[in-house]
Length: 105
Length: 381
Image (cartoon, rainbow over all chains, first blue to last red; front, side, top):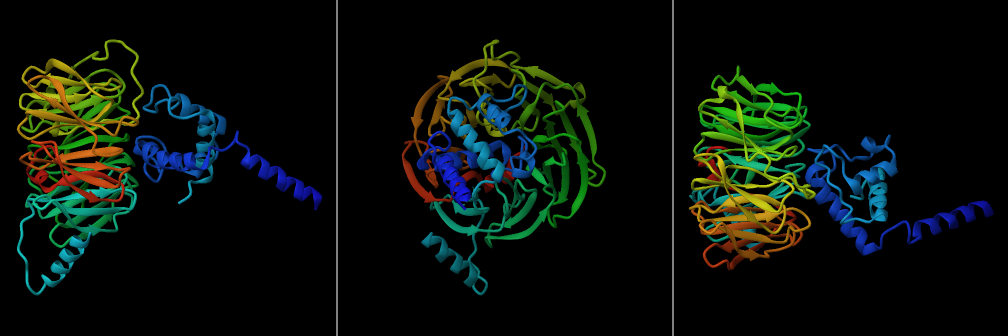
């Protein structure tokens, strides 16, 4: 019982830790950004277009760190640009988590 | 939208009492987030109706039947919808592939070709019934499909670096001429308004590939080779779009890739005439009918600005801020108005091209492409 409570407390702590999650107003901006600006190549529903699908099933086997790196630094030889001038590392990691679990509808 | 509802009521009552009208001043605005399309008219500058049921309209586009009555809307999810502009409703709809990018209508108006990413290829449909007619598999993503004289469809293959010219004058047995090694990663293409040339923009290298459609056997030639002057390109946050609208008089105005420049090419010699420094990565570079001015919008994050280039001076004449995240602009056929979509302001803004004054602002849900029925009469669409 105590262990469960501790785990729950730890989870809450992690979720609310400022180092993990962008502020709420920024989260809304980022979701709009992912849908529309990432969606320009990956499709508004992220099913893929010129760029590959970013749906959870397509990302399941991928490494989250590596995906965050691609967002920030781009992929040479493809149209995927580096977004580091517009996103922090924390924001890129948060976007990867959202994509892997599926964006809120 | 009140006006739209009144008009719809008129249309319904029109069953008993037909209200006759033409379609020459009608058009569609894609509301991409909601899978809907706004029917607009450019005489009174108003929205007439909202048409639903298009599925995924991210990266949607439309072409028009030769009589201007119907629009064919190409959706990202492979949906091909035939819209009756007079009845403001979807007449027919098919899901023809998993992932589509656009399409074109043939010179004779009888065939609609859809370009697909997944599975890569082009599918040709009967424009009247949307029955499948034939198929051209490509094994690569198809970009830059355009119609050309002789019931031909011309397109590029992104991964393969090829331009294919499909002659569909025998619709069930189209013949394909493949032009290989045209350059790395063509991202879009256009047929010039006279139907003579096809031009593919290259993402993977500095330059464009040119095909003379009077003599496609001669293959492709490279123009504007090395326009980046060996400098490191800037990030391209959104791919530019090419269509015949880029040609103003004898000049073609083309977006540079990874440079905040518009490239100006003389279509008589296909040599560089000028470069115009602009606000950001150009996305749509569109000649105002008449060719005196060229309007440009830009990629993220510089997408709240539209610039107007003065053609005789080859310089930016004017800068407008019609709204946040400007995605597209379309001129009325004689060029007195330009319609501009502002995605993040949920608005379509109408600007008077003589005074640059805003003359109307219509509510639209995340508007992207604007397609006026005057495209029905244009080659290359």
